[in-house]
Length: 459
Image (cartoon, rainbow, N blue to C red):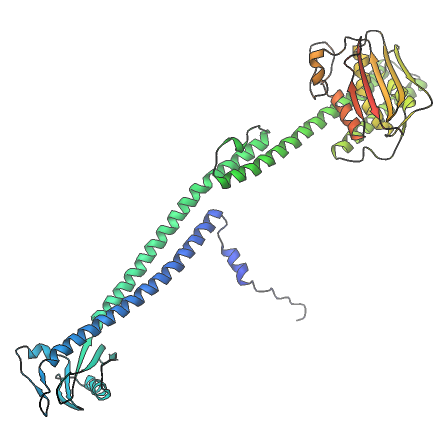
């Protein structure tokens, strides 16, 4: 029996949570219905209590009025109490008892048990009223006859059935009215909440659609109530973050495509050249070596750009010898013969990993080789705050109106100039340089051609 486990019984709050409607509209309607039910219950109880007390007072007033009318037919001026005869004796004698001192003078016929109640009231003296259940609810009241030398008491009784029937009718009417009011409250609350939440549903559908298509539409352009305006502001901020993520995703995809194109083209060219005719063993090994170097270059490019996209350690400890790295880069890019690479002074080192240095300089060098007429020069030298790398060419240069858009992604001075490119290389070079604490700038006063300057911390 020790292995049997008993499930714990759910608590009252847990049961309430399970019973709560799943929608906000249903929950608000339930809250309104519960609040209205409690309020109506209190009002109904209070109203019916006051109504019953009022009916009792009316019954007592009627009994005292009848007792006063009967008292006018009683003579207490003599030594004995006398009951005078009047023309309305039949009406006055109904449910009336007359006592002289403690002795009963007159009683209604067939009073039975009620006479004993009247005797008890008359014996206690004074003005008193009680409720008795003698063949139905009755209300007897005693009242002394004022004045005279003899003591006389009149006891009158009244059937409470009509009064209680009126009270029950009021109670049923109150309950029926409460049910109608609660039904109307629930229906109107659901209708009002539904209309109030309709803009929220619309905003939700719009946010889903806008986030899927990266729309520039925003909720702040439409006037809403204060609560919905705050919700719209939050959704706008969320949509802006989604749009930023999508833009970064597209940027990363474009940069990977841009950077991987060169090594991939080299692999395709080597394989095409290898398949044109039979090759010697040395030539096959050279092809394998070139393909392996291009594949390694692709892997390095992917690691570098993905680290940057993840906010990784692009500035991880590491140094790169500038001159060997630049020469290796010219080999990978298959640079023309008119390219010169030089360094001033002793061997220079940059405070960045070699792979990152290649990715920064590669777009600048590729552009220089693409647009140069007869000369491309790369020169490295030391600066007061680090090292510099100048990339110069004698091509047409950058048009002056376009200089301000040079480092914007996807911008090209002349898309129809016959040279391939997506306008992503220069923005990538600057962003990678800045992530390492450096910078890439364009010298607008250099002529002829173009001059780009890479600034990096020294190793």
